[in-house]
Amino acid sequence: MSIDGVWLFTPLVRPDDRGVFLESFKADQFEATVGHSFDLRQMNISVSRGGTVRGVHFADVPPSQAKYIQCFSGRILDIVVDIRVGSPTYGRFDAVELDDQSRGGLYVSEGLGHAFCALSDTATIGYVCSAPYSPGREHGIHPLDPDLALPWPDSDIVLSPKDAGAPTLAEAREQGLLPLYEDCVAFRNDLRASFQN
Image (cartoon, rainbow, N blue to C red; front, side):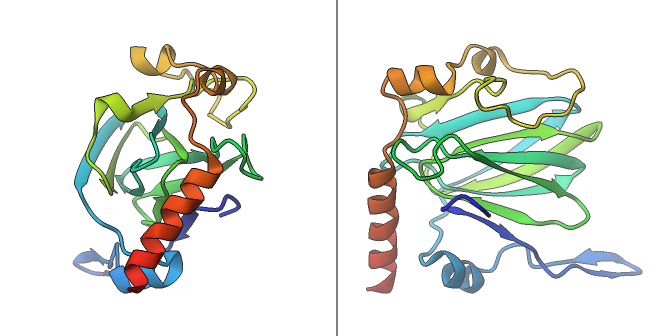
């Protein structure tokens, strides 16, 4: 993708008269692409009705929380926001549709903001995480921040009270909540160095 630290993996989907088979995650391909292993610490399943937006969520670095996201049923618009202060792509986003047909997997590395919107009547996504949920380290940015201008659909948007009360990107920066780009790069370099040893 256009933001450093985001990769889209497209599996080979093998349909036949029984259904479909695919390898949704392969450690060797992941490691060759990203440069380090994925240390699975938690798996989440999210079921959302159409128009639901979840995010923009992120966690303190270190250790933050890298995610590998797939849509198991339905269709979502998945968005990654570069919230790393000092990044050359700070404030920009990547958006991709994930669905239960192409079955792509999106890897979002530590320090980036993540959000998605259910585009189908219902959507089920699964995401494996490199660190468990820790309320004291978790933060959010308002997904309708006009300065971000994220490309949500024009339909009615459903937000949780927590997401609706989240600060804008500028407010989160003023509050010192955002990760520093240099810290994120150092963290990823440490992961790569540990993996190569």
